[in-house]
Image 1 (cartoon, rainbow, N blue to C red):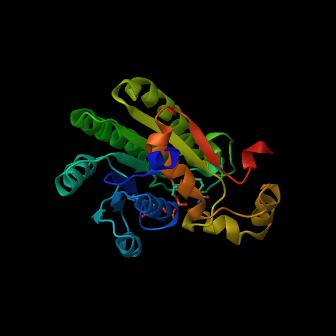
Image 2 (spheres, rainbow, N blue to C red):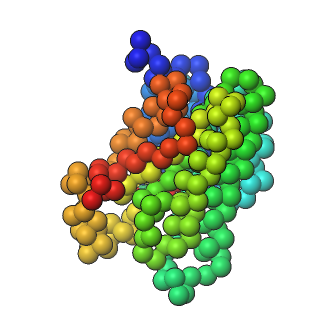
Length: 253
Ligand code: NAD
């Protein structure tokens, strides 16, 4: 029956940036659907762990700095040792730097590209190798942005990274579909998290954004739940290389 194909019982999901915001929301969603969670973050994940524990799922926390690709192999090994397998990777950890393009520094360019793009690619590569070794396919879900489609203002490295995320989502889907690996992305709209705190604090930007959202409200981490569970599940087996917007209608304007 169709609703059964959304269930993730017995699956193991790695969620990067699981300490807060959208990553926390998606980790909880995947756990609600039945998955055990490997949470990765540079921050503490006690709150996410508690919420996953309460659902009766197991949570393995691995503290790592994803500005570099160096921890990636170790994370895959530790997750596999702990749970015996991995089935789902959500590449969510990401940062943003704001500055006029004319003054934008090389550091703000490199830091953002390293975590938002380079690590996403190499984490996907490491997970795909494991999925192929296990022989039962897998799901990779990258977190894109409205700035995968639009230019944004004062965030050039972020726009570059998120535009590239939709590109590699398609490229990897093309190469790995034959291994039953699905690579899709979710493009969140304007969501209430730490990432958007400066935007929400700026009254004129904040009201201009709100006015343009057809749903008439900013998004919340819970709004990601349906999309991430769908793309992580058997219900999405024939969906590949696609970026699904969860944006309250923003892109339709
Ligand atoms: P957030 O700042 O609340 O959370 C970011 C997460 O990434 C945290 O868990 C943090 O610990 C982790 N992280 C940051 N740097 C890290 C590093 N070097 N190593 C390991 N982990 C690191 O932000 P969020 O809004 O929840 O963002 C999550 C993702 O969603 C990001 O990729 C972001 O670009 C994307 N996104 C957010 C919005 C939004 O409106 N909030 C919109 C579109 C896309």
